[in-house]
Each structure stands twice: as structure tokens, then as C-alpha cells.
Image 1: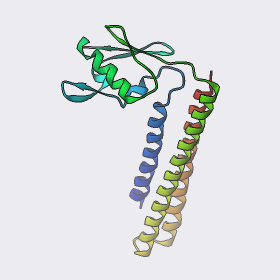
Image 2 (image 1 turned 90 degrees about the vertical axis):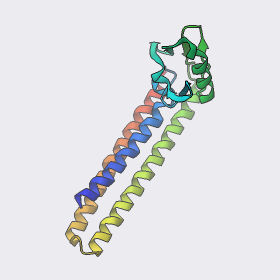
Image 3 (image 1 turned 135 degrees about the vertical axis):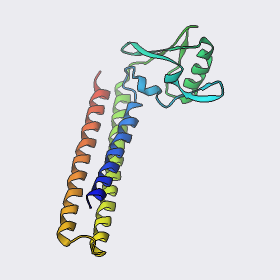
Length: 184
């Protein structure tokens, strides 16, 4: 039964990881290189992550600088960023590409905060669904006489405890991201 509970705890943990990855791509008016994580560049016919074709740095709080290792890739990187539709137009100066992040308006901050809260709620629902599946599986094990009634109760308590911890983590992640977005 411990393996079953561990398996469901891992699923809950993965749900939180997915939420954090989603939040990494939400821009807070500051330059965040993770915004580029999902962008691929056509490198000699192969879609390659942008991090593998050049150096990405943040020289100032609101600027990302991409310096490709091969100057011939400048146009391709620029095209990939435009296609990714991240809401920022790249500037090509012949040696590097700059992404300048505009300051977020108050309305946009509030809108992003709502999105963050919504994604947090969706993750909580996913975690609760995982809890339901875990409890169902434990009940089936008890029905099949694989575990005792006491084990069933213990298992349900452990699953509930894991669920509560996962939801606390989600709340913390949402709170931190909202604070980051609302900070001017």
C-alpha cells in the first residue's frame, strides 16, 4: 500500500511542477529567461531549444539579450520569437537580439493575477482528482482482501495528509507569483 500512496504523491508533485513551469512563462514586467524555454529554433532543419543555439543573458532588469553562437542564426531566432507570440518584438542589431520588456499596467497586473489564481485552482482540482483515485484504489485493495480495514483508514488518512500538503504548496506558489506580478 505504501507504493500506491507514494505513486499518488508523485502525481501530485508533478501537478505542482507543471503549475510552476506554467508560471515561469508568465512575464512580470521583468526579464525572465524562462519565457524562452518553449521556443525552438530551426537549426539546420532540426527544431532546437533557443538556449542551445546561443547565450541568453539578462544585462538589465527588463532586457533579455540573446547572442547566437553563429551569426547566421540571428534571423532564424528572431523569426522563432515572433512566431512564439510572447508579446514582445525582438530587436536585431546584427550581433545579438534584444527583448525589451515593457512595464506592466495596473489592469494587466490584475488580469495576470486572476489567471494565476485560476491556474492554481485548476491544479487543486487535479490534485483532488488524484486523491479520489488513490482512495478508490485503496478501497478496491480492501475489498479484494489485500489489506485490512485499519490499513484502509490509515491509507485514507495518509492520502488526505498528502493532499493537504500539496494544496498548501499550490497556495504558496500562487501567492508568490501573484506577489511577483503585483510588485511594481
